[in-house]
Length: 364
Image (spheres, rainbow, N blue to C red):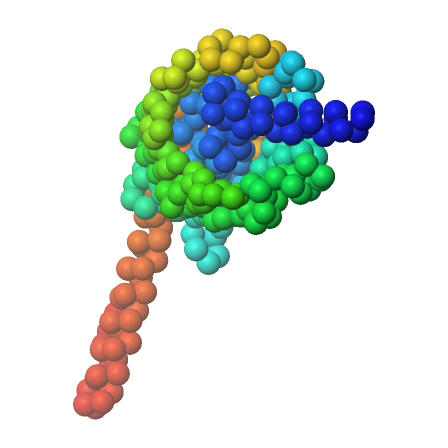
C-alpha cells in the first residue's frame, strides 16, 4: 500500500511539474535553460550572452568568448511543493572559439530537468556562431529534445502511454547579437522555430518563441532588458554590478502577461580561471505557494589565465571596445594579406605572358 501511495504521489508530482511549466516556472523545453548568472538577472540576457552558460539564451553570443570555457550547473527547482516533490536540474556546456575551419565559435551542451524517476526532460544541443558584418554576429543551435515518464503498473494501463513512455524530436534556435557601440548591445533569439512535436498519445508541439533584448554597459556592470513574445508576452529586467573586479552582484525581475511574476538575485566570485555563481528565484505572482528555485554554477576558462576577462567584468564597455578594435585589426591584416596575394598572382601571370612572347621579365 505504501508503494502504491508513493506511485500516486510521483504521478501527481509529475502533473504538478507540467502545471508549473504552464503556470509559474517553465520547464526546460519552453524555458531556455538559463545558468545561475542568467537566472539571477531575471533571464534578461539576450543582449549580453558573453559566456558559455548563456548559449541557450542566445547562441550568437558565442563570438564574445576569448577562449575555451565550460559551465556546469546544479539546481533545485520549485522548492516547497505540498507533496515534497524533488525537482532537480543539471546542465553542462562547453564552448570555444574556432579558428581553423569555420571562423567563429562552437559549443555543445546537455540539460535535464527531472522529477525523481517519474518524469524527465532532456536536451542535447550543438551551437555555432560567426561574425556576419562589423558588430553583427549570428548563431544557430540544433537540439535533440526528449521527454519521458516512468514505466510502472499505473502508466502500463493508461491508454495515454499505449504508444510508449517517451518522445523525442529535433529543435532549432536562431540568434543574433549586435554591438552598436561599447556601451550598447542588442540581441534577438528565435526559439523552437520548427515547433518540435513532443506529444505522447497526441500532438504536443512546443510553441515558437522570440526574445528581443537590449543592454547598457556601465563601467562596473550592465543593465539589460528583454521582451519575450510567442504564446505569452514576457518582460524581463536584470542588472549586474561587479565589486573589486571579482565579486558580481545581480538582481532581476521577470513579468508575464498571465500574472506570473518572479524576482531573483544572485552573487558570484571569480578566482583566476574559475568562477562560482549562485541564483535564487522566487515567484511573487501566479503560483506562489513554493519557496523558490536555487541554481549553483561552476565555470572554468582553459589555457592561459585571462586576467583581462575578469577585469572586463568591472569595465565591460572598455572590454567591448578592445574586442572590437582587435577584430578590426585582424580584419585589416587579412585584407592586407589578400591584397599581397593578388599582387603576387598578377606578377606571376604577367611573367608567364612575357616568357611566352620571349620578352624581358617585368621589373618590380
